[in-house]
Structure formats: C-alpha cells, structure tokens
Image (cartoon, rainbow, N blue to C red):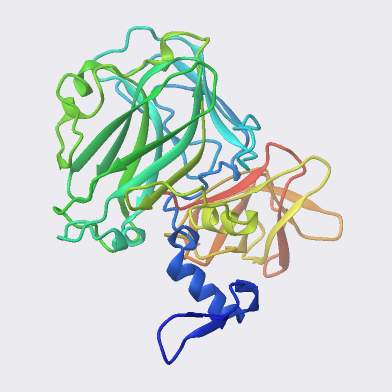
Length: 390
C-alpha cells in the first residue's frame, strides 16, 4: 500500500521508495525530515582542509608570523613573544575510512619549553556575522552549537578550544583530551546558546574559534570559562593546556572540522571541490606561477611609456575590497616581448574587479595608449594574490 507523506492537499504518494517521488518533492522531504542532510549546515569553511591556495607548506612560523599561510580559512595565531618555531603544512595523513583526503599539520621545529606569561599560539578560524544570524545569539531562542573534528598528536593531554564573540567581548571555552599518542581521534564539543549579545549582521568578523596549542599563565591562571560570559584573560585556557612547543618531536594534525547548530554532531558535510574552492575565493584569490608557462591575469592599456593598467576580474564576489600583493608580474606588449613590472602606488579595487596599476621595473618599454596583457612570470615563486580575509 502506498504511503502518504505530508499534509493534505499536498500529500506525496510513494511506495516507500523515495526514488518514485518527483525530484523537488524528494528534495523537500529529505531536507524537512532528515536535518542531517540540510545543505551547508557546516558553518566552517574548508573544514576538510582540501583547499590550500597559498601553498602546501610554510616554515619558520613563530612570534610575529601570525596569519594565513597554507590551508585556506585556518590561520596561525600567536601572541606575546613565544620563541617556538613551527612548520604548517597540508598533509595526506587522514583518519582511515572517513572520506578525508587532506589534513593540516603543525610541526614544532624549534622548541620553547618555558612559555612566558603572555605567550600563546594556536590555529584559528573566523566567521562573518551575517553567516551566524540563524544561531539566534542574543535572543531567548539562542541555539546551542556543536563542534566536531578529527585530531592526532604524539603529545597526549588536555587541549582548549576558545570561542570568542568579538562583537560583544564574550567568550566560552571547552577542553578536549588526546588520549592515545599518534592516533586519529574524533572529538565532539557542545557549546550552549548565548542569550546575551547578538552578532552584527554584516561582513565583518563577529566570532572566531581557536584551537590553542600552548599558553602562558596570563591566559590560564583563572577558572576556565565553560559557560558564556564577559572576557576575562585568565579564564581563556585550561591551566592543564598542553605546550606543543616543548619539544621538536611534537606535531598536531586536524581535519574534518564542523560547527553546526544543535547539541549533536552529524556526519561531516563533504562539499564538491569546486563549491569548497568558490567559498574560499570569497576571502582569498591567489594565481600561482608555474615553471614552464605564463599565466594570464587580465588585459589593459598603457597610460604612458612606463605604466600599464590591467583589469583583473575576480572569480567570485569577494568579502571586501581586497589587498593586492604580487611577485614577478609581466606585461606582454607584443607577440614576443614582455617587460617585468611592479605594483604601483595606486590600485582600484571593488568586490568584483580590480584594476592594477603596474610600473615598468626599468626603462620606458611601453607605447602610450596601446593595448597589453598582464601575466604571471614562468616561475613557481611568481604570484598574484587578492586578499579579503577576516
């Protein structure tokens, strides 16, 4: 006998086989009755560590080197004056049989066994306020959130995750334990909803999550803030927090990072590579040079004999007007001629297109008002990067 799904008059008749339903009805039924299948439930972008536009390895990370270096949307964070040095890399070491292909690794290369009071370091991911509105923070209906991830380290013990609401200077902190050395373990942490302080509904940073990997007493001398409250420095990390910098034998891996509304963790939401890449391109677009071939970046014209203007179209709308950096850009101004150029003092950026004003590195090689092409030189060290990161 056929089953009836839904409420009259729009009931859907099926013999227990969703395949017999119309595509639209089937999609609506799955979304309504199976929350685990709701698309984009993971608030984390690139939680499977599959996108690494800036490169797959960055060495020498220490005091003063905070920021994005390899895997998109995950940055190296540091404070105080820690002397430990790390290499951050994208790796193929992943939990067996879970569907992941990449992880991120932080490897200690110079030890700092005695952290100063204000020293701290870890891995951070950040969020726009407009992407957090459905969590209803600051209302009586505030949602709880569940963070889940896979982690591995040779150094067992207690680690802290710190959630910071930047709009309202509020925090909540929870610990997890690595129980078995050098073994992939899945961790799940639930954070209660916060009825105080709503997130701004804009494209600025409203919240970030830090996976702390070492801290001094300034941030761990109090009582860990396991419920939402105003920021208190000493309540930020556990007093038992591991110091990953205390030996050059230490390394820490993470993948499968997911943050979702609710009090339980669903299976990791795998997105197609192209969808994941487009989400990352909102924050960073990097065109990397390769050996043996040039990469085109746009076309334009020469305003005079020493300067050219090149238009670069962004592949997706960026979060904000980007900051532009480059190395080894060339202007092709003939079938076989090219001149090296450098970014001039004036550029014109919007969310969708940027105009690069490029000055010839030597001489006056251009013809005023002539059309030209911009390209990345044939080198692995050449690049153009448009950065709109939080």
